[in-house]
Length: 242
Image 1 (cartoon, rainbow, N blue to C red):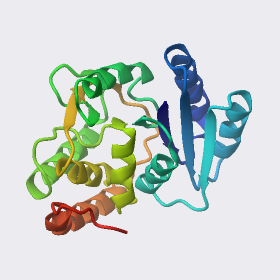
Image 2 (cartoon, helix red, strand yellow; image 1 turned 180 degrees about the vertical axis):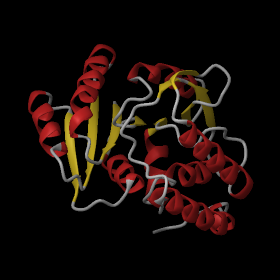
Image 3 (cartoon, rainbow, N blue to C red; image 1 turned 180 degrees about the horizontal axis):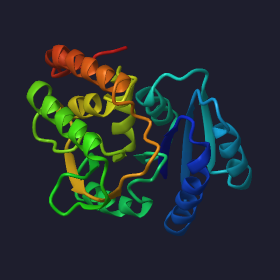
Image 4 (tube, rainbow, N blue to C red; image 1 turned 90 degrees about the horizontal axis):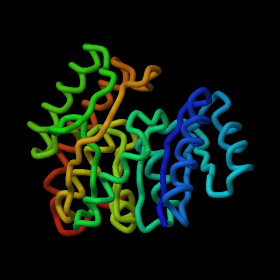
């Protein structure tokens, strides 16, 4: 079975079409799947939208966090609730179309434990670019990750990652970062024991980004500093516990 985990914070406007697209595609290629939407303490109609879709498709599930805890916390909750042999994490905006999963599944079938979508690898198809300021933020963040935490992954932040099911649950049980830098922590944990491959994908920037250039950038920097300090423990045989 394939599990698709979608974190959602105030996604009332675009979540409906996303769930339609995901369910329509998976209905064609999968005999068994589940879509777990994690409402991260939304204040709009996100829950209502998911409930309406779930009423028409029992494979869509809603998981609600009582308050806004952050994207990492939402993905963690969804992954730990998943039951699939494969687990895909996808952003609610479908900046990477759902059918790109086939590229990732091919690499997992070839032996990878984790296949991550990448906007930076040669062959990536960027249909709509971000504002230059956000592109600069992304490049700066990647330089910090490369210099302070780990090398070898060109794009840690693309919101489209496929895991073997038990690998995903193993990693997220050990994770601690609740905010947007959770991808870096998961990949740092993964590199100590799993085979990770980076796969070029189609991607387009979608407006209404939930990342604040001020507040969230500062929090991501702080999380990177904490991960730098934790590296020596993460590299040990046993994962750190919460």
